[in-house]
Image 1 (cartoon, rainbow, N blue to C red):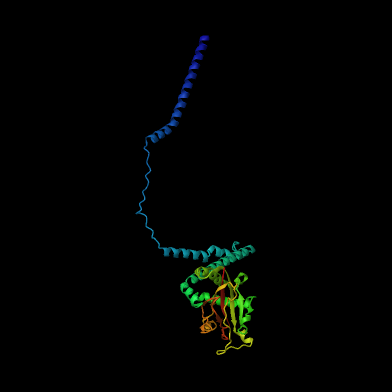
Image 2 (image 1 turned 90 degrees about the vertical axis):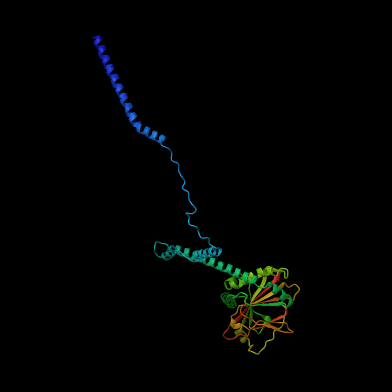
Length: 353
């Protein structure tokens, strides 16, 4: 019995060992089957030669050559772009303003306020641009005057007459209109007590609040005062930051209303004077400028040399330079015509430092 039992145990153990062996061999074969594709891929990768990336050569001949623009062409393109940026408004902005930026509905209070600020900003930028343009324009006109001849004539005769100072009908019309507005609306207009009976008024030009009435005229004064001293350096020591300026207005209606009737042939004698007679006087060079229409040509003006009179009548865009300390002359009154209204003359005195 014992022997049979041992035989049964031995057979059972053998059977269990056989099953264990077959199970391990089956697991190994499955593992090998799973790893086989990875091993094949690894071998292929090791055996496969690496491809070198070849950089594509770009030939300069293949690229189209760009046209070299001249300076004038580049400047033209730049100005066109600037003008487009200043003047054009995009369709989005137009639609937004029309729809009130509120989904196509009527404009709201916030939209109106925003639009108002935007318009004010545009107006300020436009006004500033006009001011800079005018100052630059006057500077160029002043620098373009024949200053060599001017110095000689000032030293020899004491005065110089220059025509076509600004040479711009548009600017002249604006300045003449501003002169009329200054005369009508300025609170500082006063009668010239030294010329009673001529119907002449004086309006001091001081800037500040006056700029709303005569911006271009003030810019003429500022730019001329700034740039003339440098052009007369070594001849006259002038201050580029200070001056005395006023607007002389001749009103025919007022003159007639005072009882002084002046027609052709009539005379109202005015004295010859020197502008700066006091030893402490700082005025050195006086400028008289006439922006009136051509209808006033030949009227008004000045007369030099009391002994041998030299009459210089007013003329549209005429500039007269006078040595304030040495030149004796007479300011002639405007007779005018009924349909002409008032005539103006810009008087600018350049002073020493």
